[in-house]
Image 1 (tube, one colour):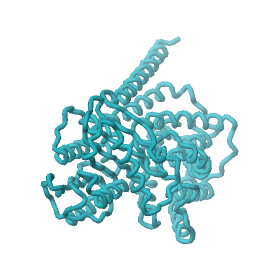
Image 2 (cartoon, helix red, strand yellow; image 1 turned 45 degrees about the vertical axis):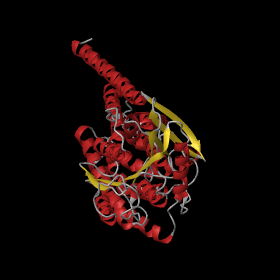
Image 3 (spheres, rainbow, N blue to C red; image 1 turned 45 degrees about the horizontal axis):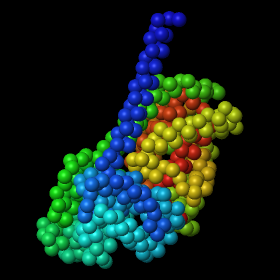
Image 4 (cartoon, one colour; image 1 turned 90 degrees about the horizontal axis):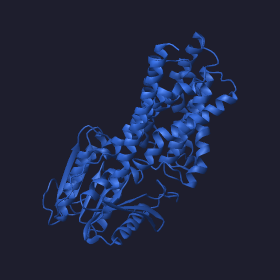
Length: 491
């Protein structure tokens, strides 16, 4: 054996060892965030709840935390950990149809308020909580819920924090002690927050009378990343301290999303070092004619699909298609896009049995790499039964789109593959923005759009040694369908 081969082997094993160490460190970092806290998980009137509080807490103020559309308890954990370590008792809920809540969302007028009431009852039943000192914090959809609760039930709540706020009938006196926050990169919500502040009487520091009002623009964040901002969390904590007349005893900075990022880096290193062991050689090299056809479909298909989708949405109710709010309609659009892309650009062959096998393996890798730790950091990754039963339909809807994308990636290496990712990402973001403007009820897609390039990057990175369109299609369609099933509310 040549010396260069020996060195290469040693280098490969060194990187594998580094990746494993980084993974262990990231899991250690996530799991230790509960240290010093009481954690209780239970249901109240069918609503999944998670209580976080200091282990030595007695007669402590309580805070109910409400997520936004498509959210869950996990995405609000940054505020949960920050406030619990600061001495507050925190109750986080999964609204009906969201996260681990298996009940379908019916969109009745008081549905979300009833869920919040259940969380309130769950919070005041905790022995550590001072029931006279309760506050609310909500994001996006949840912000509207908590502002309404503070207006309708001001005797219950001492303060309300609305992050990326939606509409509410706020006034100079209600809700009590109102803080508004919005990310600098989410202009629509910044404008709405300014309007709400004016409607609420403008800035005020009278906490004793419940008339305090304030709006803060959180720098360098948008609708999702604001939830992981230490600046946002610190401002929320300070506002609650002033509202309750207490002071924090613990200096804590939430790092759970940092550990999640380290975990993803570790996986990328591991796949780079060991991924060649999973190599599946391409069947053939694409010709120049095939490449031209791919680009033709790549450019034309999404815009034609958007026109067809907009036409269909005006003639039939797609709001709960495939049993999900918005998510089913999005899957239908992706199906139309994929079918058109294949028709214009690709003549797919039947999959080899190896393609099916390795496609399943790719799904497992994708499920573990970005997904498993997400369950403990930012999203409900384990599907409750109603979601799991609908998941195969979403996979089938995504399959044509992913098969066409797999053909676009077929035979590419290095910077060409990175270029494919960049162009696909730019096109997908453009389509999501246009969809949000042209199709009623689909605005939410533009808020989640910034996450999609990262999803595509992970799919392309993990699959780079498995250069087969059907492998990419089966693995990434199963993964993307799982993401849709885990995020969008059950209808």
